[in-house]
Length: 215
Image 1: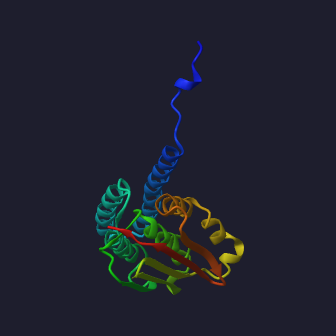
Image 2: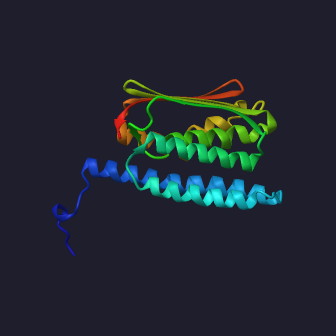
Image 3: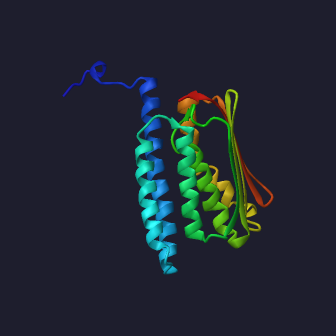
């Protein structure tokens, strides 16, 4: 049967970009769930009394992750609250005193929007590939600043001794989470942003600068 090629629906470049963006947004949900279930499993193996709290917290967090993932943009304040709840779960999974945290947020987070889970995923990677490998000597610094027409993010976390040298963190920079974040930023900011993730000795550093989008 002959099919007229001119009758075949062809995606415009804009439609293709939109479909790719939706694909990477959807990929973040199983990425988040896989990491969280692994953490929950480890907690259950310890037969921790906090396992029910972790399950309840994870359920609430997952509901919000799914809701946010359906949106093109969320307010930065919503992303910050999601990060705060995630860190609270990490304190259950790893233990209250398992890592040192310096988490600072400055500026107006209500009046600016970002693609959902972008900053969250970068912080989740810091725990998965850094803090979880460091025992009780782990630390993480998260400084988020909204200033004039920019959002500035600095993440620093400890690495296990020799961890960067054997290539694990190098692989994480091109993994699913980082790639999805880059694609989300490409879709919203048309590559007008700066993202640099790299190991520096036994420290992993992430710097992100993006222009503000109105909430």
